[in-house]
Image (cartoon, rainbow over all chains, first blue to last red; front, side, top):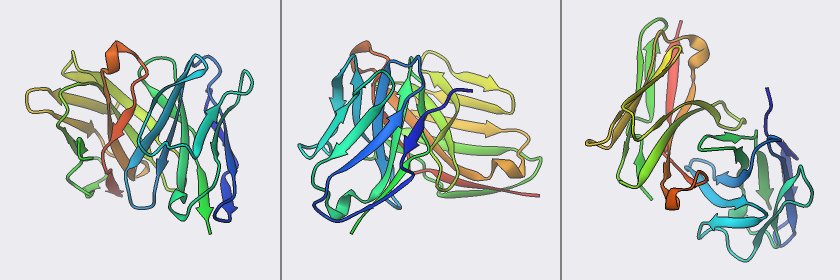
Length: 111
Length: 116
């Protein structure tokens, strides 16, 4: 069964450094998303992406964040200058219609 | 943001019995609801969904009920199995201009433990 994959599974970085989280959505899906879950909190929406542009973004998704689909398979989330509060699990998801399928997540730790 | 609430942080059930997980929402613009199961250090796994035009959807041991007037949905698992032990999240998608790709708003999750 097709699934969403994410790399790396864990990332440790220093505050102020740039990180790129990578995702390979399910191949025939058209809509792509990033969510995050801070430890002990809800899963929160960050951004949705369709037809090579951002469809919607939350207030969390400020100028430090960007997304890109550099080729036909990858979908990336870049954080330009990480802060301590960016430490979280980041989940990529994709969908063809309403149901979103999630990847296993990248655990980001900012020191 | 309390648009989707799961008021029970945990639920403990005996194997073979019914598990009922509940979810309430406040946003009347939600048009699609989903249940996800999550194990530690893994991503949410889709279980079952329901459109706002229905009041019930069934898939094997899992049934989701939607009561739009009460803004309440529930997930029934019958019979419960020890492998069902996980965190269960309810999520809702708003109509977002009639598109399929609206963001999901999640509840806090309910930890289900099924005892052998």
